Structures are given as structure tokens and as C-alpha cells.
Image (cartoon, rainbow over all chains, first blue to last red; front, side, top):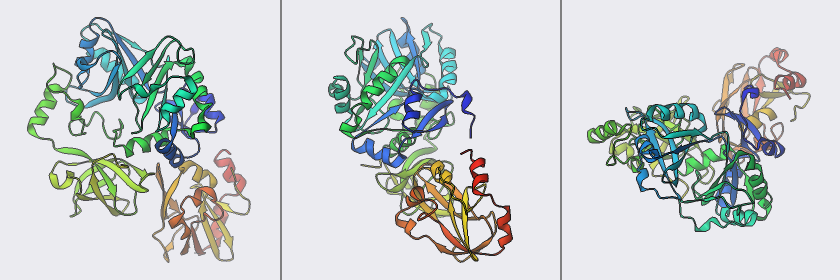
Length: 371
Length: 126
């Protein structure tokens, strides 16, 4: 058991405790891992709606005349394509192409961007941002002052409308509305963002930390009407993995680059210089040594991070980075890096996962796994 | 959280119920709660003699996998085959329908080294 005395809390820890959540240490925070159970919560999100407290995530505000220049040098995706009210997914790399973190970038105004980073990386990310800031942009760590709820699932928009009167269904994917006129529960500073980490429709709601409880309570007050359930980090992980989304620390890290991770779509080698671009361009030219693939288990067995991936001859060709039992498929699913040759990476290829003295066959598939 | 009297408990979170020279083994309420949703129980030691503290199988939950350890030495004589179709029974009834294996006890004196219900409850802080 970890010492919970030194853990940070989200602004609404009291709600989780009152709901009987199982709390675990995660990234220095005391976080709800489950309320009723991972599988039950997973199905609630896939079939109805789930509400997540993800206030542990980090938020960094970038402002000033050179804000865009700073962001463009920092990230691999092209922030010059953003307009006010639009966000993008990206990674930021070291010069050697290793991934410092994956993040969302929101353009609030031409000189005002919001960067949303992983809780486990907040200190390192901000140090890296400050070290990269050779244009004099103003960086402000707003992590502790910001609450974040994710409302996800096919009924998410109906829940939000019923609870707050705000109909977010008009928002396109990766668009957001900064609501400052009190329309949402009388609050003066809320961002409704059409984003998420579950593969379902829904929104993420940013607010001042002290307003998190107001929004949580309003959404929970209509939970029964829509079958919405509070959802913990356990289901957040199974949902993201079933959708084929990378998790920093598992599937991507300083030891991996975005091209081999299948994140070439957010790596715009043609845009002006950014950290890692030269290395990544050279890697692309030379050909990638390995590639992140998804796979479904063909028999009984659940892949776990660190297990070996083998070819039919029992030769080690890679390693599992994430794995779980898919609640929708009722089968093991996983992701891992394998040698970049077509007989290992092509969907339909049969590989083997070795663990604790036994192996099980898996078939390479292109995620999402559940559709 | 339940820790029934009359069972012997281990520091590895198994329990054993003794009837004559037969032992019935499962995992504790605390163990199932820590593991969360259980999706497979695998026992690959049927009809084998397994020594105390050695691995007799594994339990796979959604989030994690855990090995299962013999509370005392014995020969595995039965596996709870209902768990093949309903592994969640271990979560729902860990001391009853969610039992894992039965063994023929080899050395009953090993029971003396196991924990009582109250000792175990104290160990897990419940």
C-alpha cells in the first residue's frame, strides 16, 4: 500500500469517496480506479455514458505575440492550421525523436494557446517547454487551477443538455467552445471540447478547479435518467486500448518515436523546424526498424506490457506495450512493437505472445478493436 | 470485507478450508477486491503434487495478472470448472462458489504456520 498522505487530490475527491470508489495512487494523485467495476463501467461508456474526473491532467497556457512560434517549434503537428475554437492532437519530441509527451493543443486566440499534458509528465514537460522557449513566449502552469471532466458515450450530449442546457452536438470533432457568459451553470470560465480518449462521442469539460464539483454534481443529477455512470481510470484504460489509442509510458515514451508509433499523421515533416524534425526525417528516409501493431488473442490469454512477441519459429521479434481483456470482444487485445517487416505488421499476420512459460497465438489487426 | 472464521489464510491472500485430508483453496475477499474484475482462472497443475508456496495457477483480471500459491503442500485433485464460464464468481463469492481447487493434504502440520481470520484481517488493515 502506498502512502496516500503525500498524494495530490483532484478538486472532487470527496465525490469519489462518497460514491465508494476504489482509490489508487496514479501519477502522484489519489485517483478513482473504479466505482462498480471496470467491465461494468466500460459497457456504460460504450452503450450509454460515463463521467470521468481527469483533473489530474496538466494544463499549460502559452500566451504572447510569439505563442504560435513557440508551439510550432515544440510540437510535431502543425498548429498553424488551427483557428480559434479548434484543437489538435500531437506529440512533442526531443531532438533525437524520442517522445517527451503526447498532448492536445487548443487555440483560444491567435496569441493564446492551451496545452493539455499527461499528469505523470507535468514537471518534466514544463521543464522541457521552458528549455525550448527561445522566442520569449509566456508559459503559465495552470494545472492545479484547472478541473477537467470527460463525459463520454452515445448519450453524452443528451446528458450535457439535460444537466446544463448546453447542446454540444453541433461541435465537430476537435472543436471547442470557450463559454464565458455563464450559459453553463452560471460559470464564467468553461471550455466544452469535442474530444475524448474512449472512441465514443462526447466532450471534455475544462473549468476552474473550484467549479469542478458544480459541473460534476449537475451531470450526476441526471445520471439515472440516461444510465450514465461515474467511470474510473481502469475503464479509461480499457476504453482507450480498445480504440487503439496510445498511452504515454506504455506505448510511447522517450525511447520511441512517433513514426514507429503510428503517429506519422501528427508528424508534419514538411512544416518549419520543430524539435526532432531532422532526426525523424532521416529515420523516415532510412526506413523504420520497428512498428507498433495491434493484435487480438486467438485463444485464452491476456497480453501484458513487457511480454515477448515471437514469430512462428519462437524467435523474439518484439515486445507487448499494452494489453488487457477487451470487454466488448471478451478476448485479449494488445499493442506492441515488432520488427518492421510485412509478415509481422500486415493485418492478418499470426504472431505469438510468450508469458510465464507458455505462448498464445495472436492475429495482427488495425485498431479500433471493438468495431 | 469478509474474513470467515474457521479458514486458514496466507500472506499471499489465499484461504484454505480443511475437511479431513481434503483442502479447498480460494482467494480472499481482499484479493478479489484488489484484482478487480476476474476474467480467467488457469490451473495447470491438475493431479500434480505441488509444494507449499509454489505456484498452482494464475488468475487474470482485466487490469492485472496474479500467480496463485499453495497454502500448504498437496496434490491437486479438482478445479472449479464453473469458473471456465463464470470467472466473475470469484469476485462475487470468493469463499463459496468461487473456490478454485481442492487438494489432498500431504502434511497437516503446515497449517500451524498459516494465519487466522483475525491475523489476516489485521495484516491487510481491515
